[in-house]
Structures are given as C-alpha cells and as structure tokens.
Amino acid sequence: MVPPRILVLLPLTFASLGCGGPAAVPAPPEEDEVPGAVCTNRIDYTLGSETHYTAVYHYDEGGRVLQYAERMADGKQIFLVKRGYDARGRRITQNVEDGRLGIPHRDMTWEWDDQDRVIHTTFVRSGSELHDGTSESRFFFDASGRRERDEFFTDGVLSSVSHHRYLGGEPFVLETGRDTGGDGTEETVYRGFYAGGEWLVKAEHVYMNGEQIVTEDFTYEDLEAGHVSRRDYDAEGDGQADYVDRVFWGEGGLVERVEYDTKGDGVLDQSVDFEYEDGRIVSRTWDVFDQGTQKFITDVNWSGARLDRVARRYVPTGEVIETWVFSYGCEGDKPMDVPIAPIHGFEYELMTYPFLLHFEDRFGGFPEML
Image 1 (cartoon, rainbow, N blue to C red):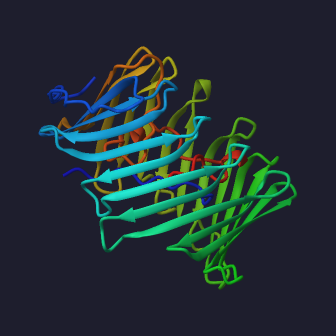
Image 2 (image 1 turned 90 degrees about the vertical axis):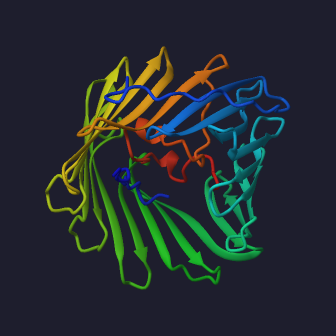
C-alpha cells in the first residue's frame, strides 16, 4: 500500500534509484506537429513497474510552452494543454482536453492591462453535465497600483466580491473582506500582519458570525532573510496550536529539515530531511510516525543544471513507487510549468519550503485556473 503524500498547509493568504532498478522507458510516441514550435522536452513517468506515461512539451522561439501532451505507453493521449500568447509574450489562452477527470474540456482566457497585470479571466468547463459552466474573475487596482477589489462571477451572475484594505501600522496590516453573493455583507475577513511591510508574522481568518477565528503565527530565525523557524496553526481560535511546523536551516540558506506536529501535542508526527550537492537537492527523506513507522526516500539525479531522474521509493521493501526520467531536445533552461498536469508530482518532490510569506506574494503568482 502506498499512502498519500504529506499534506503541507500554506498560509491563509491565498515542493540514482534504490532497490528495484531503473524502470523500462517506453518507446517515444509519434510527436504532434505544433505550429510555431521549435523544440521539445520530454518526461517519461512510471508508476510502480507497469504503468507508463510520456509527457512532451513543445516550445516556441521565446521558450514558452505552446503545447503539453501526456500519453500512455500505447500512444493514447490522456491529457493535452494548448497555450496562446499575445505580442508581448503574455499568456492569453489555454485549452485543456482531459481524458481522465470529470471535466473533459476546459478553456481559459487572461486579459492584461498596460502594466502587465491580469485584470480579467474566464474559465469555461464543458463535456460534463455535472460540472459544465462558466467562471469569470475581474481584478481592480487603486491609483497607486495596489489590488483593491476582486469580483467573481458564475454563469454570468456575481457570486462574490473581495475588498482589499491596506491599513498600515507596524506590523503592516492587509485586510481582505469576502462578500459571498455580492450583497454588501462580508461573511469572512482575512488579516495579514507583515513585519516591516515585508514578511508575514501573523494571519487571522475571521468568520463574521463569530463562530470561529483561525490564526497562524510565524516565528523567524532570520527575519531579514525570511527564514521561518516555526508556524503555529490554531484552527479553533482558542489560543492553542492544533498544528505546528518547525523548519531547520543549513548553510547557504537551504532548508535541511521540516518537522510536523499534526496534532499540536508536542509529539513529532512526520518529518522531511533534505540533502544537497552544489546547492541542488539530491535526496528527500520523508518519515511518517503517526500512521505506523514508514519511510520514503526520493532520489534526485542531475545532469549539469538539468534534472535527469527523480525517483521515489518505499524504504522498508525497496519498492520503487514512481519515477520521472527527463530528456531534452531544447537548449537552455525551458519551463516545465503545467501545474494542472497529472504527472507533475516531481515538482512536489523537489519542494523544500512550503510557505509563501513575502508581501509581494500575498496574492500568489500567475492566476492559474485548474
């Protein structure tokens, strides 16, 4: 039995084989003809010892992903992403064909302003009676360029509004009120407290009916560098931590170990240890103590600055759970940034720090739509 990966909670603000040997790599599938593509990179994925998938990225001259396709060993396509860009290289369209999940067709658009900010998105789901529909988001900014208001629509009807209020002070407070239904009443309020206007030191999620306040407190080993040493998560608002994370830093600002107390009782439930060579992760060891004693190791191999192979194994039996083998037809460092892709679990195996805490990251990065 292979248990699920550890659950890493983000802040309220909105990653050589062992026993069993290398898995056989299936023959390359016949590649698509993609207009504008100049080169391809590839991932061969094996789950267990029998299930094989192949993922191919097609890039344009600017190094942007034009198409990403996943196929089974027999060549059957199970997942396809196509992207379009404007004259400035900004993503404006994305079409997804998914043969495995409950929403076969997903079409997304992004509209930008002249300051390279996304101001409007659409997300159309089709091919599934249960999930068909259209979602729309609009983002508004004040005169100083700060995000001021977000509006969300479902099938053309306003479904919620978020108001962002910059309250100042030390620590600097950002408050976001969420009005579900757009009737002028805010049902929840989120407050982020940023030391020096930069790093999140406390977060509050207040339910305005008074029933619950969820809080997070962050303790820093080095505030200037943003190195958190501990997070306390209080789900009940009673002042008692229900979940505690501890982060241990090594030389060069690299995370060496993360400990998880998933009950807030002071007992270590899970831990993850990292090893590095030349500043790049080469090993990830996950120990689980709260579901019996279990150990998983992820080995990461590099060819120069490029990933060569990532493999996750179950230590007690030596079973190789899953592997990713990378091959490159493109020069330079090209992005492998299709976060909704089914086989992109290798990104999780490479993640060493689970938090986004800087004020500039308060709304996340590019507004992906799943």
